Amino acid sequence: MRPDCYSILGVPRTATPGEIRAAYRRLARLYHPDLNSGSEAEERMQQINEAYATLSDPGRRRQYDLHGTVSGAPVVQRRPPGAGPRRGTAPPRDYVPQRGEDLEVCMLINARDAARGTRKSFVVERMETCPRCRGGGLEPEEIAIAGRCWRCGGEQRLSRTLRLNATIPAGVADGSRLRLRGQGNAGLDGGANGHVYVTARLAPNRGWGHTLRFVLRHLFG
Image (cartoon, rainbow, N blue to C red; front, top):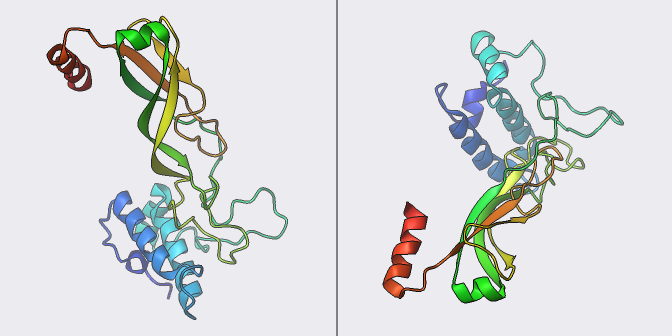
């Protein structure tokens, strides 16, 4: 008898998609052959990949809950040698490139910087292509039991906080928007990156009290 998918991941049958994804990531860090040299790690990781492939897909999960199987076939199938583009053991689906989301940033500058132009740095949190699977969502092909990438959980991207720079041109007007091309969130399935749009806001030159109220109004409404 095939092990129950819920038992393999250690989640109840009422588990949410987020709980299932979290359980997969936790188990992958314990049993992935790159991290665990135990004799049973490879077999256990194969079961984990199969269970996650079933429960992470709403249609497959529904069929599994009703019939205890998915079309009577193994959930995860190995890629035959030389068979088309590499997609490892990911559930079959259409891979349509999706452009990454744009990000919006508000930057406060004084009248002097607005008149002369300046270069400002700012911190942004964006989604970047997973360095392990390089945006494929799968483990590297040389791993025999390739399944969803354990680092990003098959999501293709990871969140990262970093510092970017923007050049504010001389004579910029209050409310002007600058575009940093390709600096937004990474795309999916080979899609282009989004952009970062920087809105320049001129601080009134009326002392610190006015400036502080101006900043708070634009940050918190």
